[in-house]
Amino acid sequence: MIKSFRGQIIDGGQDTIVLHTNDGSTGYRIVKFQTMSADPYAGDAAEHITKIYKIPQTAFDGAVDFSDNTLLGAAIVNNHTNGYSDPSVPVIIFDQEIFNQDIYVTHVDTQGAVACNYYIELEQVKLDLSENTVATLKDIRNLEQPA
Image (cartoon, rainbow, N blue to C red; front, side, top):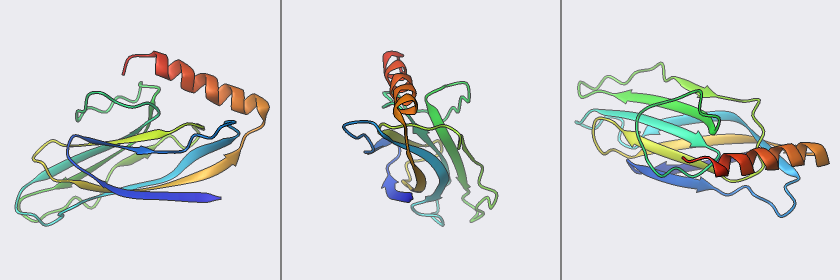
């Protein structure tokens, strides 16, 4: 089963996608992540960096660090003042990563303060007891690390 989520997030904002269950037996895997500027042809330049994390973030920046084990995906969209929008939008998702807790979408516009739209598709996966335990322990371990 595929579940989809969409929203618009302000510059420097964070949205929570609520996924947790009482028993943790439902897992998820990201299969699609798309972003688009809230005002694609605005007169101001916008450079959107949108990221998906396993844990809530306390600081927001334009840096993308693939060695961060709490990062699930990242997308970049460039809108330039000359009306040119970069058609090759880099999107990276770690599609083999299974999680069973809430996820967090962050957004930073490094050129201004334009909001960004996002669309996420998650594949719902039934977890057996051992998979449930592994996913839950990973989430607990991630929460213990400073964001």
